[in-house]
Image (cartoon, rainbow, N blue to C red; front, side):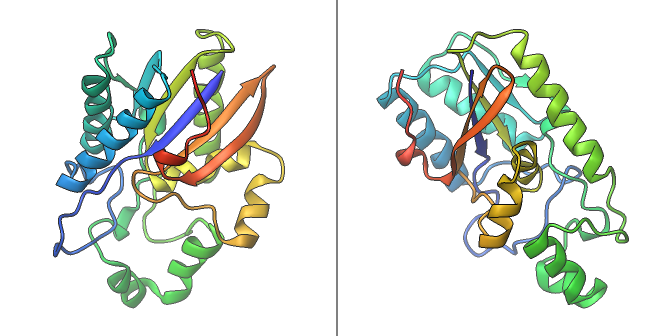
Length: 215
């Protein structure tokens, strides 16, 4: 099966203060975020691709994103909500800007997460890296039992969780960490293929217009 992962669109309007928003910050999409969802729908339509499922986190920004794509494509499905795609709980970082986090908790702690993906041991973060990986493995295992190898599933999630997909492919996260290209920009996508229970990464952090898959 083909697994298309999209980071949801922008949640801040121009001029608004940009802060860290985790699983406890249920923001709607900004106007640009809605445009980004329509752009993904347009690129799917252009390639004659129709996801058989669109699975989103419970957060409003991901559900809105998925629903826009369903509406634009006229798909006869509903958004499927799954908490295993939810953004991380950033604890005491939630609602703070990067500058405020650096001042309050130390620049090194912030940079260790941003550049090295080192999970903070303080700051009140919930869950753990191991739990996030377990949840993603479980979700993919369930998908294998319900779809065929040729089907396309679209997942809409957030940047904090997306990076952990790379850790499910041997050597992929380490390679991208060294190149500092493991993050996914808002509205960008990644494409994986699951064949015989083995994941292959075809694309990562590319605009929808660069999607290399046709129906």
